[in-house]
Length: 223
Image (tube, rainbow, N blue to C red; front, side, top):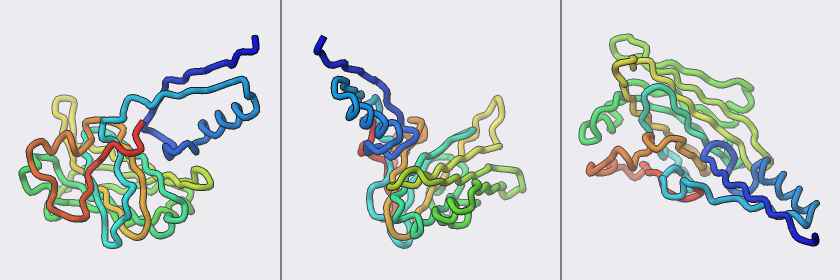
C-alpha cells in the first residue's frame, strides 16, 4: 500500500527507432507514467554499448561520406535521418568482392557495381522500396540491393538498406564488401545489426582507408 510500482524492462536493440527517447514505445511509456504517477518504468542501457554498432552523427560531406560493411547472405542497415535533411541527402551503394583489406578491394577501382544516388525524400514519396540488381563482370547475378524509406515521427525519417547476395552456396560463403555513400547536406545515424558486419572487426592490423570522407563505426548512441 502507498508504494510505487517499479517495472524493469531489460531490453535493448539496435534495430528501429532513433535511439533518442522519441520512439513510439518510449513516448508511450512516458505518457503512461505521466498518467500513473505511482508507476515507474526503468529500462536497461542494453548490451551493445561497446560493440561499435553506430555510424554517423557527423556532418555529411557535400561530395560524400562513406562507410563499409561486409556480408554473405542477407544484411540490413537501419538509418534514421532528421526530417529536415531528407530532401538534401542522397545515398548510393557500391559493391566489390571481399578479399583482404590489405588488397585494393577497398579502393573505388575495385567496385564492380554502384547504384545511382537516391534521394531520401523521393524514396519516401514513391511509397515503395527501390530494388536494384548487380551483376559480376562475367554476367552472373551478384546482389539485390533494396532501399526502403518512410516517415518515422515528427522528427525523423527512417531508411533501411538491405543487401542480399546470390553468389554463396551451401558449401561456400562468399562475402561481399558494400560501401554505403551519403552525399549532400545534413547528418544521419545508422546501426549495424550484427557484429561481423562492423569495419572494426575486419580491418585487423591493416590501416583504415586513407580517405577523409571515410568514417568508421563508434559507440555513440548505442544501447
